[in-house]
Image (cartoon, rainbow, N blue to C red):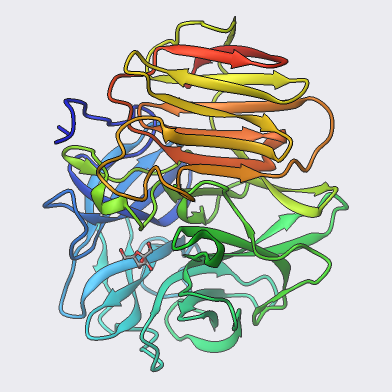
Length: 447
Ligand code: FRU
C-alpha cells in the first residue's frame, strides 16, 4: 500500500509486474497468435536495481499471462533493454528443431555491449557463448539494440543508441554484426531505446520512422520519445526534410521507451508509462511501473505535414450517453467526447481532486495540477509536468477518447494525431464527470 494513503493504485487493464519494478518494454514481438512482452525488471523490490527481463504473453495485448524471469544478470553485467525476433529460417544456426526466438540486449557491466540469447520454445533462454556479439566501440552509453529485418540487404539490421546518436549494424545471421551507419549527431541529451520501422504513407509510398527516447531539451528533463520521418537505405536511416522532424510521439510525460512489436501484422508500439524524473518516487505499493496500452501507428497528412497518428488497441465497447454531473462507472472506463468548440471535461472526486482535459484556443490540453497525490515528488504536479498541450492538426468538431484505468489516463484526439499519457493518483477514486462547453459524452467499459 502507498505510504501516502491506503490505495493500491494497481491498474486493471495495463500491464504491471506481479511484484517489484519494471521500466522499458523489451523484446516485443509476435510469434504465431501470441504477443510477447518482456520488460526491464527488478524482482526483489519495487525500485530500480540490477536489471532482469520479465516475460509475459498475450493474444489481445490487454490480458497478459505472466511467465516470470526470462534473463538475469550474469558475469557480463545486468540485462538492459533490447529486442527479440523470430529467426524463422534459423539463419543464426542456434535453433535445432525450428527457428528460435533470438533476444538481443545490452549487457551492462564494466562497459555496455550487445549480446544475444535464444529460446527454441520462446520461453527458456540460453545465452550465446560468444557474447558480446557487438563489443563496446569506446562509447560510455551504448545500449538498447532494436533488431529489424533489412529489406534491402536481406538479413537483419540493428539500431543501437550510442550517446548523442544511434549506430546501425547489419548481420546475415544475428551474430556477426558490421557497422553500416549512424544517425542523429547534434541531438541534445543521450539517446535511449531507438527503433526504426516502415510505415505506409497515404499516397502509398513507404516512409521510415526513427524513434528514440531521450531527455527532451524543451521539457526541462522530461524523458520523452521523439519521431523522425525519412528513409532507410539498407545501411542507415536518413531524415527527409519534407517532413516535420523530431516531433513528440506522446505529448504527455508518462510514455517513455516506446518500441514496436516485431512480426506484428500492423505496426504496434507500447511504452513504459512513467518519466525518469519521478518514476522512483511514485506512490504505488508492491509494484512500481506499468506499460501504456498498445497502440497502432499510421501516417496521416495534416495541415502541418505528414504526422504519425496512434490508435489504442482496445476492443469496441458499448458506451452510453453521459451528461454533466454523471457518475463515473468505477475506476476503469472509456470516455468518448465530441466537441463543437472549446470545452473542458473533468473527472472529480469527493476530496476535491480533479483531472481536467479539453480543447481551448491553444489546442488540446490536460491538467493534473490538482488531480491527486503529488507530494511524493516536487515536480510531478509542477510546471511543465502538471499539464500537456498540443496544437490541433485537424479541422471541424473534435473527437476525443480517454482511457482511464485507476491511475493512468491515456487521451487520444483527432484520430490519434494528439496523444497524451498522464499518471494521476487521486486519494479516492474519481466519481463524477463534469462537462463545460459544447461537448457530448459517452461512457463505457475500457475493455
Ligand atoms: C531507458 C533505459 C535504457 C536502459 C534501461 C535500464 O529507460 O535507461 O537506456 O537500457 O533503461 O533499465
